[in-house]
Image (tube, rainbow, N blue to C red; front, side, top):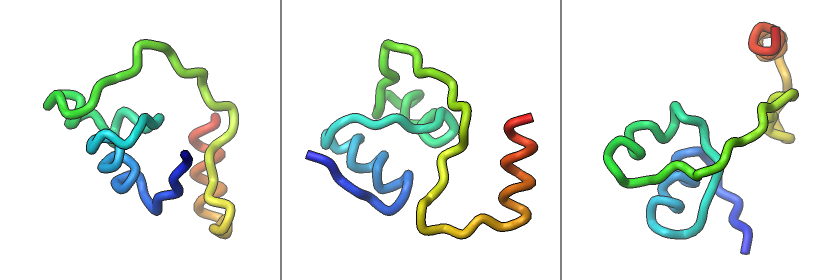
Length: 72
């Protein structure tokens, strides 16, 4: 079963409630891991060579500049 949820918070809440697993940024889940409400998977994830983008969001000059900065 696959779910499509609108935000990181919705995904994390669903996983915290026992509805599966996800890959989320350390920033988004660090406090929940510290509190013992979520657990880190015991395997490494490969680095991303391209950023994730929402397919329905337009790229702006500022988003392109940030992407370039992050990939530098």
